[in-house]
Each structure stands twice: as structure tokens, then as C-alpha cells.
Length: 408
Image (cartoon, rainbow, N blue to C red; front, side, top):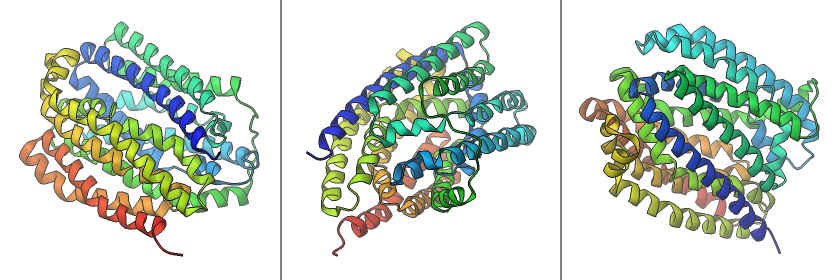
């Protein structure tokens, strides 16, 4: 029977999860946009940029490794947990140390307090039970559905309640910390087995050796996804950053999320059929077609109806987001379709391909973003993301041909 039926069930469960969480996220954005100003979102955005960078910089690739590995994941859980705890401590300390320099860099002293508060999130995240990866490795998407939906719903509710009570950007951080604590508790209540404090040097070295390409790829991906945010926050102002980030989030909710749903489901399936290149090629082409059919209509609707969308849902203080939203709708479509190759490359243990493709994207972004932002403001930043995405397509295609079409 193969994995087709399993894939369909997985897509259904993950599709339901992402659909529900995106609806919740959309409601959350709409509600918060009515209660907070672009400046407040910008402050939170600065703090988030720092945390995201440190998390990427210290990425071990342990989750991808556990899914790729043929042996039982129990052999690596203890070491994975110890590494996760140490990583959380390192990130938390780094955020505290960098809080003042980062605030000075963006000329936004108000961001210091948010960074200090946010430093507790990675510390808590480090203690989450790593056995949660079993849901994805063993194709238990129904359990993944309920687990992630509970966490996401809690995050939305607690954040909205806090913002409603305080009307401050700090509430966004407290919402993040609260949801991380909830995920930590839930992971120990419902997931077995429990890891132990046990460090096995050889296993950790094996993880790091394979994960180094993911770390580098993640670093490149960070600069591609957030390089525009950094430039906007530095060259323009915090309010512009808030508007740009909200436009980015809105554009990716219905577009790139659809691609990520399918990619997350097919990654472990690709792993299981990775030795059969003919079967793998057929599966990839089906996935690519499905993503295109789902994504393109969403992008077109968002492009055509950006103005009424912003006016009705976000309000008059967000009108400057309309032209940016149109450009980012195009970017979202390109990104979702081209990004479908990442799951395939990971399944083939070709992490370096992802690194090189992302590097070319960054190069395209880096060359164009400064002149475009100086000429067109936040719209220029959005245009540079499209250029970066398009620049990487030939490189991605080369690697796809090499793996799926090469003879022998």
C-alpha cells in the first residue's frame, strides 16, 4: 500500500492543525492590532529578532537528526536533553548581555526591558521533553495535532488577555513566556519516556557533525527572513518595523504556511522512501503540484484585496501596510513553492544543499536591500525579498536535477 494513505492522513491532520492555528493567529493579530500601536509591535519585533538569531546560531539540528536516524531515538534522548538545557542557558545569558547593546543599535532604549523579560523563554524551552519529536518521526500526526493546538490556543488566549489588561508591548513577551512554560509542563505530563541527565560524548558528536550544515543553513535563513527587518529597523524607525512585520505575518499566514504543512508531513515519508529515487521523484512532483494549487489562489486574493483587508481587519493606523502586503503576497507564493525542496534535501541528508540555496537568497537580498529601502522604504525591503527568492531558484533546480534525475 505504501505511504500514500499515511501521507494523506498526515496532511489532513497537519492541515487541520495549521488551519486552526492560522485562524487563531489571524484573530490574535487583528485583536492586538486594534489594541497596540505599530511602535509597540516594532519594540516586540526588535526583541524577537535577537532571540531568533541566537536560537538559530545555536541550532544543533537534533530534531532533524532524530527523524533521519534509523536507530531508536531513545538512544539519543538523554544527550539531546542535556544539549537542549545547555543551549537554553546559553541563549538566555546571551540575551541578557546583549539587551543594552541591541537597544542602542536600534536607538530604542525601550527595547531593553523587553529583551530582559524575553530571556526567560529560551531557558524554559531548554527543559522541554525532547521525546515530543516521536510524534513526527513515527507519523503520529493526530497526537501532534492535539499537542500543538493546546499550546497555540493557550498562547493566543493568554497574550490577548494580558494585552487587554495592560495595553503594553511587554504583554506580548509575557504571553510568549507563559506559552513556553505551558509547553514545558505539557511535554512532561503527556509524553513518554522521560529523559535523564546523561551526556554521551560520541552521540553528541555525531549529532553535531550532521547538524552543522543545518546550523549554517539556519543562520543563512535567519538573515534572509530577518535581514530586511534589521535594515528597516535601523535605517527607518521602530514604527516602520512594526508595520512591516505585521504585513509579513499576514502575508505568510495563508501562503507559506500551506507549504509548510505539507513539507512537515512529507519529510518523514521522504526519509522512508529515500532509497527509491523513482518513487521519491514521483512523490516530490505530486507535493510540488499540490503546494502550487493551494498557494497561488491565496496569494492572488491577498494581492488583489490587500486594501479592504487592512481597512476592515487591522484598522486605519495600519494603512501603510497595504502596498507592502501586496509585494509580500508575491514573495509568499514564490517562497512556498521553492521551499518545498527543503524537506526532500533533508530526507536525503543533503543539508548542505539547503545551506547553499539559502546563501544565494541572502546574496540577492543583501545586494539589493539598501538601495531599495533608501528609494522605496518598507516596500523596497519587500521587493528585495522577492529578488533573493528568485535568485536562488536556479541553484535549487540544479540540486533537484542532480538528486532526482541523474542516471545511475
